[in-house]
Length: 258
Image (cartoon, rainbow, N blue to C red; front, side, top):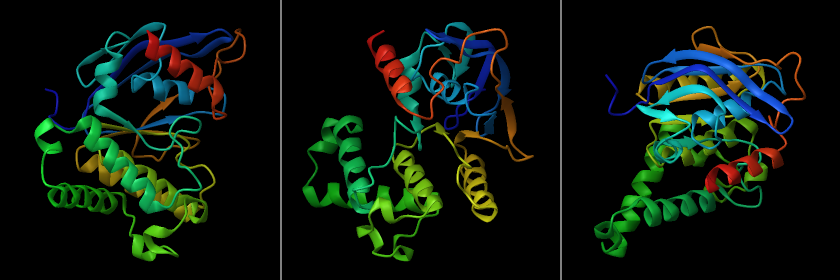
């Protein structure tokens, strides 16, 4: 039975082919709600494209997948509605010139504008502000980010954050939408051994609370359900696997027009 919170995931012969060849193909796995799923593989093996396909941001071209009871590639918009992206280079990056407070405030405003009911929009300003602050505080706590520990508290610029702090901020922003599926790219990139352990500890805690977590990494922890990608032999270069950004952004734009 599907959880009212976390989204179950499954894929069967799942693949995506672009103009330059296969990004990934033949992916098969099943994960229950509240699972920690690690997408492991070398750079260029389609990890990012798989993450974006499973969150409804890219349209697959082979096989099928089911996310939270919604079939892919047919139900892309439905999956986007209950999934959220943490850090994905070229897609959902933090703005280095923004402060922590500016990022949080912007996300709260967007959430109220696009996710709120008409009744909530008509509430007194003080009540709306209190609700937004409570949402922010809850998300920060879940992400393990205490602004008081930052150099200038919430006025700290993103460019001054440590890599793990920036990861926590991205996760907090994603959690403000109360997603059933949280997806992160490059989870362990440029992290020390100690910080890598803390990052996985954070993701385990979110999964334990019921949110399904899908995390791209170079090396999966032993307790995660590991899905491996690899470059397809005998094909052209993988299509838009991108940690560089442009190919991914173009593909997402194309999906949105479909």
